[in-house]
Length: 271
Image: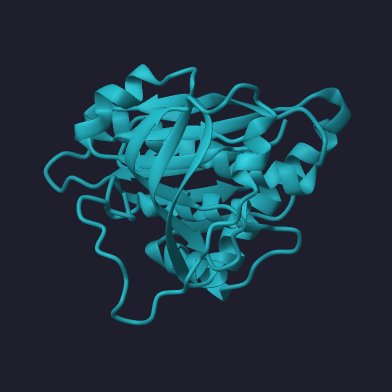
């Protein structure tokens, strides 16, 4: 079975024990990066599952993940881990986008690296056997280089409609995901203020209109994220097919000049 080791160190100089919420965040972002890597490497196959088969509580803490792949792609699991580490190394150390990587893949790697020096002190990815050893010590340089590859940010104000299917208000994270019919398969991530938290929670499982500041990478067709300022039920939607027409009205994406970026207020893009 293909395996990969993760070494994670606490960011608290007075306590080397990881917070549970930080460890969960680490694992979620790594899984998202692995899933995006699989999408570009093994197309059209069911997602690989990962099991924690080793855990050592020390400083740093070490977890060992094993790929549990369907029999049809089992032989590719080892190469998937190899491409995962090679991809992180290429973006971080050479500012190069690996072959077949796309916006979603690079963005997932950037999200994985954002937690270093914030939620965790360090993150090291290691793959030893079989095959040649690989080791990547993830740093904030991966965030910077991924952002450079994705291009400068573009901003626009607008609205879109979709189904609200996911929300996280734990510890005031205030993040929700809305799925437009013709949008990206992973939905559109929206950040929102506490003032509309109750409205957002009441919208779970419903079609909603989201109005706010759209944040695009230069190469994006759809916004990378939206700072949601207003959220209401989609009263104009009589049938899901009408969402296609609604979304296809293009939103102007002006590129901001230096010093002319919009004031984001409570919004912290790095969170």
